[in-house]
Length: 248
Image (tube, rainbow, N blue to C red; front, side, top):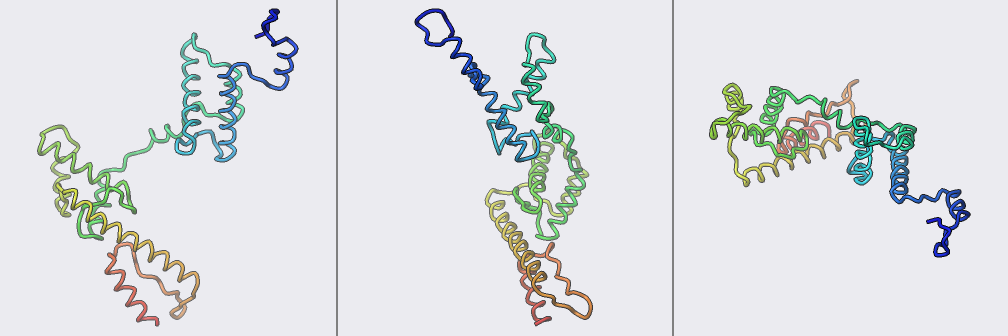
């Protein structure tokens, strides 16, 4: 603190010299400038100022706080965000509305009938409707199936308001939907499904590698690899054996 008292070693000259090299007296202002530098680096790296919480959690919280202060400042005359900060953020293209949240609000829910058709396709591939909650090919389908069981329980067992109706129950019953499953059943069936999915992905990569490294032809047409999307691991194994016998 500058003072004429002999107890202080800080003089006007020293204050001036420190300010000339950008010394910040307010620790809060210094921290704000450090976060501003982080945001500038983030934009340079990722192309925008919509900070991902998994990449930089602290900066994510800070940017949301800037938006909050900005909107409070516009609504309340007693709360003012410094104009210098607003200008600094505007200069690097800071968005005062979080584009990620806005996009999530506008996202449309997948229609029930579309999910049903996805489940029907799953049933055709695996012979049952016990979809793993972390199904690799369609993660949302496992969550949807679990929700159908919950809605069914609300309607039939608890007699509470539910999105389930008789028409949907009949449609699900028509493909052998299981309304109650044990944890043991879910765990074991999920392992089998995940094993088949990983095998399909492995075979898919093998097909792509084979086609890119060789030019097997039949007349003028390239040999078309067999469909791997709707086959179990046993069917894939049999198909591979037949293909090798045909072209060896």
